[in-house]
Length: 308
Ligand code: AMP
Ligand code: FE
Ligand code: FE
Ligand code: ZN
Image (cartoon, rainbow, N blue to C red; front, side, top):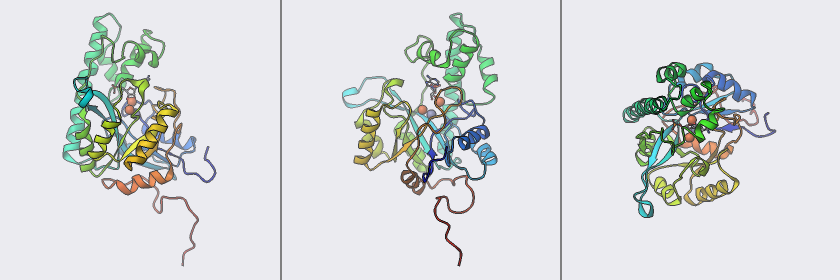
């Protein structure tokens, strides 16, 4: 429900256009039900949901067009020689038609398809009853990720839940797992900036997901043009949030909070974590590649000034 005096802002959600389960329209209805004033749509590696969101946006709700870009950090220094670390970069208010950035998204989606097919074939060869053709059909054109394969494993009765699929057969240490050639994070940051967008490091200390980069890498990414850190995220412990918050202050980065909502593919409700309105205003002032989807007139809620 709406908090007295507070604008409620969730800057990280996924629809069925990638690996969530709500259509963009249903996602916005869920945002309104949760008492949100502002929601960002940040599907993986695609902007295909933006037009749907613009059309379906309920009056009174502001939608920030965004995306979550799949990237890799290549270890350097003391960690040189380690395999690359998966890092996710949230991008807001960028120009979706910027040619180099658009081309990189096409490449990433191709990587996803080839890799999803190989994971599925590995599972099928080991006797698990999953079919790539069926997974693609069920994705209804969404950007296929491991959650789609996880659902197929649940439907086939192989595992009890999407969560269980992720901790077993689809884990990055599983023999069936296949990696993908995600964008070098420094190139990703440069592309988002070139397209007028605001790059924010997503769930950067979520150790429960796997290996994470360290503070040095966050400094280097900041030198490369990164503008913010996602601090309040369901996968961050209180200690991890405090650490990231202090780092952001030291590096003069903006901070965000968000749910990383995926519909029924994850248990986190939309609006579970939210962004400070001042930080949101800072983000708006930095994004120049695309406008918000919003009611006409001033965005900030404040006292109505009489005309004249
Ligand atoms: P992929 O991008 O195909 O490697 O799949 C990773 C995606 O799966 C992440 O972006 C998350 O959205 C999602 N994910 C990770 N862990 C889980 C989990 N335990 N349950 C559901 N979805 C998850
Ligand atoms: Fe996801
Ligand atoms: Fe992510
Ligand atoms: Zn996400």
